[in-house]
Image (cartoon, rainbow, N blue to C red):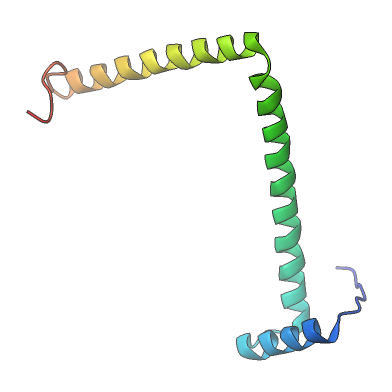
Length: 100
């Protein structure tokens, strides 16, 4: 593990000291955890932004929209058929409404 030296503003240093005392952990552990959480959050934000950009690009492409709808409809039909098969296998009358 490598060492790093960081200058902290007084208010952050006081907060770090207080948290270390309260949690009975050392400052290095707290800083390591905070940096790890920050990097994880930033990576997640980047991924979400990439997904949003891809969704915007697809949304502006009529062919992609048509293909997406076809895939969704096909998947929905298959899913509903699988539910009916499972109900029949379990002895449930798929035509009978469960709320009746």
